[in-house]
Image (cartoon, rainbow, N blue to C red; front, side):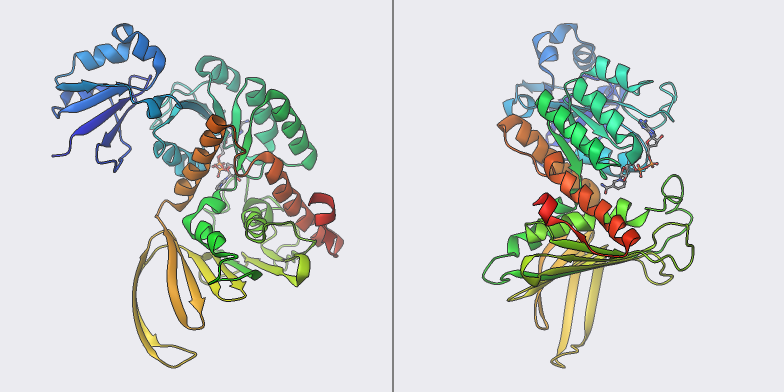
Length: 436
Ligand SMILES: NC(=O)c1ccc[n+]([C@@H]2O[C@H](COP(=O)([O-])OP(=O)(O)OC[C@H]3O[C@@H](n4cnc5c(N)ncnc54)[C@H](O)[C@@H]3O)[C@@H](O)[C@H]2O)c1
């Protein structure tokens, strides 16, 4: 039987359980169930205040009354010295599907509370953390190190400003803000407050894109010459529900911004020019369901982006091809457990293949020869978000610059806004001369 490591947070009802072989299974349990567990345990407190006065804390009292055998009481410095408290505002789909599972993956991160104007503090349902009636009481009472913002974009500015004024670092959903002016104001305030703002363009931290980035410039891949990005998105009532569905800037603002950020990341510099067409053949005043975007980088290197939400055909979330001077890399999203056999198109040779890639995969090609270079877990968004958040925590602790900092991300925001300008004006918009 595995020994168990109990990790006890300052909130007596949130107890996290991990097996000692480091295969962590985040698990919430209430204190009644904790009392019923008979396994040998290690236990420790995650907060120094509790450690100093354990006998007075309710957590200690609950634990002392439990029937488990306390084998060892120890302070694990690496877990506690850099423990960060995070509070979350906006408790909708992104919070539930991305943020909460991402936080659970980080042992040195503690969710201390949340706020959402649509959720009454008295009826929090399945949420296992305190919910506050407004942002101010959330910040005053929980004193988080990091304020995470997962509200619709129009509220990011006010929420980030409040967080910064309370001394928090900010972990903000994309798009960072609605205007460049708001983004600049927040960057100025963050610099004055000596705090970071990180924007969750987490695609950079997906295993498949990290692996592709690593290959660029290597002897086997060579220099990156061309990126082709294609999305075929099957819209339906569910995907268009709520505030997004009516937004005339639906596709490029909400999704295209991830692809634009990836292009900046892969080429490692700013495009000279961006050209975009966003025809609306089915609904002239509706959302931008078709984005045809081209980015020109120095030396004729190019990115071609097609985001097609007019399709009534197969849903393909994002396929990328990166052409290097020596090889190509193809990445795709979505689960694969597949056995394939057939005759190759090019050399007419027979092949068999078996692959498991639950969240996505990246293959490196030399002609017909393919080699898998990375895959992602099923929770690809939460996994990448936890990696970006860990990067922020490390940056705070080590005094380094985090990835996706607002100072960098404002350029991704500017590129997305320039795509709409180009589409409206019907001509290319110069970019690098303003932003390099
Ligand atoms: N990084 C990603 O991969 C990713 C994926 C999906 C969504 N997002 C982003 O996350 C954000 C939220 O998207 P969503 O899908 O969760 O939307 P949603 O509508 O499901 O949830 C938004 C929540 O914010 C709440 N809210 C509204 N005004 C608020 C305010 N002033 N303060 C606090 N909360 C407020 C709403 O009540 C709602 O519960 C958007 O910026 C979106 O672009 C990012």
